[in-house]
Image 1 (tube, helix red, strand yellow):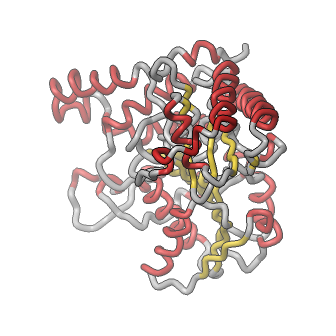
Image 2: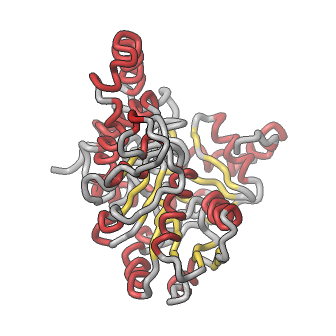
Length: 398
């Protein structure tokens, strides 16, 4: 049975008249998110208080929600843990990978990686005074740069700027042949692209849940560890929830077994409730249907923009199978155009220096939304409305 995107569209709480093309940055709330969060606060926290850790199984949320995310990414049960932020989970994954491949001293990434990933890699090298090199090459040079001198391949599957998509299976296969440990950042692919972590034989994966998983601002990140590594993996941040017996309060640290050893501190229970509301919807659709529909939507937007806005240059790959679910267009005053669009309730976003991004999540975006957004964009570009001074005043968050 085909996924019913007309139904899922009705399950998101987006203001009437708003076309939300920024789910690649922050997903919108589900209509049940506020109810689930309120219920947790009013029925569990307020009435059961601290007893909720046992009676409502709060203590198991990092692993149980992790198992739901594992299904989305094609991973085995008990290989994903939820909690903390993406930066922290990346830090954990990098350290664990280094410990598994101590003889080599190069971390390979690309210039399309999210800067925070690169900051964390260099920060880890500096903090531990490691004799490591962070080697960054152009995305198209990654395959040829995977050699036997490299320790770790550290990539984001979908480029946050352009939407360019790496071939995870191809690159991981070569990395495996050359003896590398692999880490994939799934921030811009989880929840909208088919991912098969087990088939790709990835070692580690990390991601956030506030983009295509629609968990909301502050929703927890996740960390995947290949089952074959769980017995030997080391957690650099040894918090009490990663202890085998956290409530024994032993002074000596003894790691928990399995994926639980990668926990750190108290789980963000309220934020996780909003995430679960979104997963309830995502689990009703087929991820391959999501991919096919997002391609239809992006192709339609490209066609309309090419015809009506020739002054905008598509930066994303032309081939839909070489990109994720968002598109990037270049224009010298891209920020002003995005601000003008927002005045018409079409929400996209801007990335320095001149890129306009538009995300197409089929869970809440349809063909009519794309056609209407394209029409409004064309009107703004041809009329020069974007050239107003007020649209060029940049906010801190762009």
